[in-house]
Length: 119
Picture 1 (cartoon, rainbow, N blue to C red):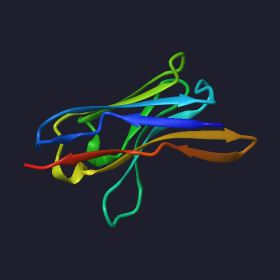
Picture 2 (tube, rainbow, N blue to C red):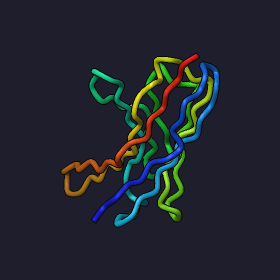
Picture 3 (cartoon, rainbow, N blue to C red):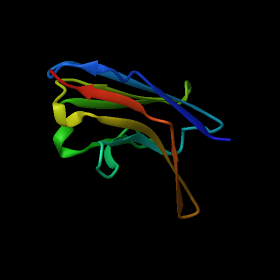
Picture 4 (cartoon, rainbow, N blue to C red):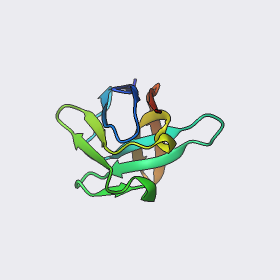
C-alpha cells in the first residue's frame, strides 16, 4: 500500500525557517506530480506547492519566494523548505502524490506535520 510520512514540523517564530520532509513507500514517484498541501484550523485544505516529473515547480502566490519544493525520486522523497515564515503559515502540512493514470487522478496523503508560527 502507498504510505507517506511527513516530518519536520515545529513551533517557530515569525521570520524563522523550517524544512519539511516526506518519505513515500509503496509507490515510485518518477512519473507523478508531488507536493504539499496545508490545512489551518477551521479552514479547508489548500494547495501550497508542487513539482512535476520534469522538475517544474508551482507555488501558491502567498508563499512564492519563501517556500521551495523539491523531489528526489531515488529516495522517494519530497521536501519543502520554508523560509521567512509568517503566522498565516500555521497549519498542518500534508505531503501529496498526484497519481494520474489513464486520465484518472488519485491523491495520496500522509498524516501531516504541524507547523506553528507564533511569537
